[in-house]
Length: 606
Image (tube, rainbow, N blue to C red; front, top):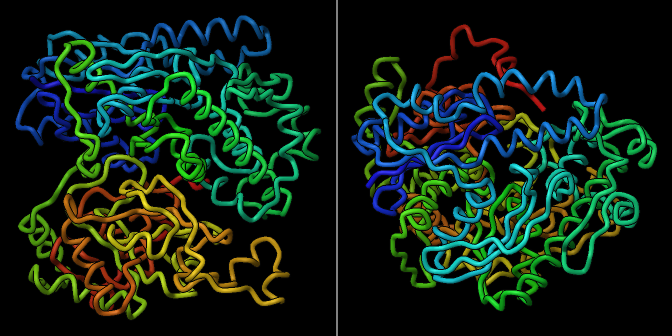
């Protein structure tokens, strides 16, 4: 039985195909259209999922959409009416899309999905999140938390997943939202909402929590059980076209930072403050839910579950014996959740988990390109390359990394979710003290403060990081072990703000953030064997099982999908080498791109 899950029309549209309960394929629309966070109907992602399984729309048994559009429209109408006449501009802007598309989802699906005449299932938004958290997890029974901006009326929920069912036990309703609180500070510190929240998380260690008490006193009433209410006098998102208002700006000492303008210590302190409030809310929720449900395990989804710093603290508190986080925790993962909800909860099919292995398949669920396709592309465009054997590949790339070369790595099925996991990655030497700044400014064209994540072979993770658990999806932050840290000199301890970047903090400085933390990906080789073999060879030859892994894209652009995308990104940056499966391209051998000036203007920079 084939079930297609769809998320669309908010941000990060996606599609997922589930066959007899197994996740066959999943991808975000942005990867095909090259429009970051694309919210349009995911026709390209759908076509990929169908093509990958050798079927067409008429072969599908069910289609599942990840929320209930009429409930969302009800919330929007009621919100605008309660704030009238102040919300009229926002209402006028939103109405046309609702009238044309969002309210007519059944008709849109039937029109876009040629040949499909079957039933369309509409779980609620947070049911889709909960399903995406629990059903792919390794647990037969677990508690779950979902947290995001808003879906229909709900902004956070918790409940229990058991066997083939999920049950939501309690919810927090709009406009009170931990996700929207974080997004308000994302907007206020000059980053783009629904895109720049992870920048705030990365900026937070440079600051002090000077505003934490003010946030808890004025903006959010956070209870011991993790429930909360927000003071809406300070926010504009219910009725206006911005997140914050003049009262908010007065409270924090000025207007929002203009995008691209200089970051000050105040912005860093604001980031640290809202990050700590978020962590405290998540920990209180976790303690309360453990007490109420008595469950050993916890599953997480929703956009707030991408806050890997909060996730790491939740794990280290040992409230639950183990936690599992959906790799595509945001709206994209709703497509996967809706499809699995249909298979298990709606159709009542049996589910059996062993407590160890999840069902996400490493989240390598996107397109894969065969060697013949790649060679045809390279030859037809007169692009020089060298072909390596499977035996040669690991050592050759390990040697290039050791020589401080920056490499675009394109191998296997593309990742589903926002993290690059060694299929569409840019890799480098974590031991290099200058690599973080080089890769940020010359490769990624992004802010210098942004940290990079390490990929580490699973069996060596606890030798370098204070964590015993696997983290295959790069969703946990853990401290670098004290044994490999280095003491700061007196002069280094006096460094202020972004100057702190220039002090190496460990033997793997390129992935050690200024608070001695790292966002870890453990690699075990089950689903991405070549990536594992390459890192293991690097360890064997150079004594380090850790490399830099950052997403294969530049600022403002989605992660690359095709070999063509990869080659363009390689040529437009200062990368030294490109790996396309077992084919190696050397930048020195390449001719400059023709007619490629001002290419960055194509992308929206935030």
